[in-house]
Image (cartoon, rainbow, N blue to C red; front, side, top):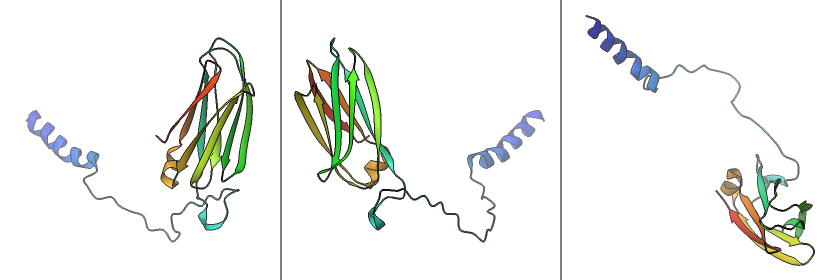
Length: 148
């Protein structure tokens, strides 16, 4: 008898817990929309939701370096960040991206060694939160991009 009751309970609760039974929806007079507008994106081309272009720096050397990171889009400089990285130090920062396009991230170490990488981002890439890695090895920056 207990076995039959157990199987009966399992047979009726499993479909409910797995979502196989239809849901009761409430009727509301207002549409279920969320509007978020971000400053900085022009007109219809801007995305409703921006995400961050993540920049990760790592000093793989034993020396301390001064690093200048610049992010540009269509020859317009969007951000310049100057950092001092101790040996074996890491640092992260980001920039909110509002539009698809080609973004150029460049790094200059001690005003001597420069390296740049271009990242082409569409709306889907931006929503994933792309990341640019900058590793300083032998006093020179090595850049790589990951769209995730």
